[in-house]
Amino acid sequence: MIKDILRRPSIKYLLIIFPLFLLGIGLLALRNPDPLRNPVLFCEDGSWPGLGLSYGWSYALLHTRGDYYTMGNVLLLFIAVKLSWLLSGNVFNLLPQTIAIVSYAFYSSMATAAFIVTKKVLPNKLRIVLFLLFLLIPLGKNENQIIGRLPQIGYYMPIITIFLLYIRENGVSLCKRLAIDFGLLLCAATNPMILGLAFVYVCWDFFRNRFTNWVKKNWTIIIPFLILSIFLIPTMANYSRVPYDKSNLIEAAIGRSIVYPFLFPWYHHLHNAEVLVFTVMLIIFIAVAYTLPKDIASKRLLLFSIVTYIIYNTALIITRPMLTTIKVSHYKSFDFALDRYYTGLNALIIFITIISIYQFIRSNKTAFKYVGWIILSSILIIYISHLSAIFEIRQTRFPIRTGLYFSDQLCLAKELPGGKLAKVQVNPEDGLWNLITPIQYIDKSRCSNNSQPKI
Image 1 (cartoon, rainbow, N blue to C red):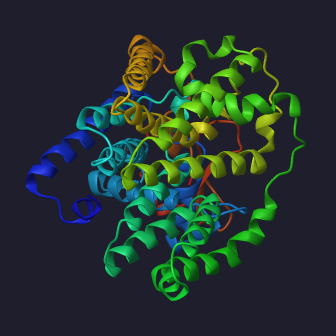
Image 2 (cartoon, rainbow, N blue to C red):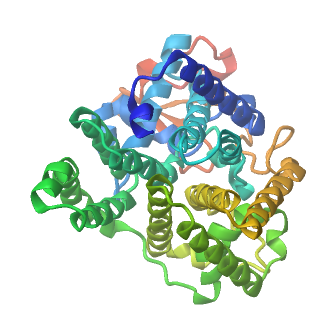
């Protein structure tokens, strides 16, 4: 199975995968067209490209944040900048639109990757269901901050890591293993939590192999990750420390990460007791599902996913204690800035649940089959009947453009001392987010006489 995935795909296979990928882009653009309808740059989508254009992209890879690296984000922004230049002749003229397209493509690729990796774990119909659920994950008030934007892609790095480790474990050549391990390193250089996953993985593999075989198999992970850790761990001390609010720990650690993607239409009516009951039932369901499959592939993928979820959720609460400080009444969801932290966890719990459902459906026990079909049908009914809560076609719940378009903001660029750089206000227009760029990249031809750039 895994060799088939890594081998150059046949034309017939491409004719399935590529249309799925394009379908995903189309559905995401339909789900949240605001980035195309109101082209502006939001937060890091504005400041980080300026860093790359002003000081070089290699500099931007290492200096976007003070507490960890965001190399994956920077690489995708680099692609978006180059696309804008290729399509318009200028790095900024179409940058909001190209960022949106690259973002749609990234999230569609996650759904497509889930479809590919589960080739021999799930039947085709369930793979399609998984693909669609990945595209339709409810995002609370945060949809317009995630779909069509690039700052939040780091929350999907643990899922990419699962896929890469799963493929790696099923036997690949040295060249392919090097490519996989480079991908793992890039994930760790985008989300530092991957360091913990890599450590657990090599420890797990240590007890399964002789020492010499273990070193031969894993040196391409151990050495690069040790080097990255030397540079990365000291900077992680810069994480902001906020006191924990234990009274809100259940929602922060369990409710929003486990319950929300299944009961999102009624989430604001729930209480701690109901969340705990649902969580216990889901844990029992997944635990039983793990004991059912006899094939190694299903067990391994479930194991990797469950362990990753536990590490991911724990790391999130430890490094983001402010998630427990938001005072809510009866689970009225988080502030718009906090829902985004759970995108990867929600995708992961859906991934685990769909694989678990199939273990029940294919069981020899009739009762288990019924349980699997009932749970699957319930999930599909909930999502289909509440598509209006997922698609923001007419109006976004979180408007980002409150005034000028990015093209207008470019016309109001202000020259900085020295005469080589200019500052452009990006969204939100609160004076805190700016794009610093070399003056020569600003196109004056589209500015009216009364809004000429002040450079």
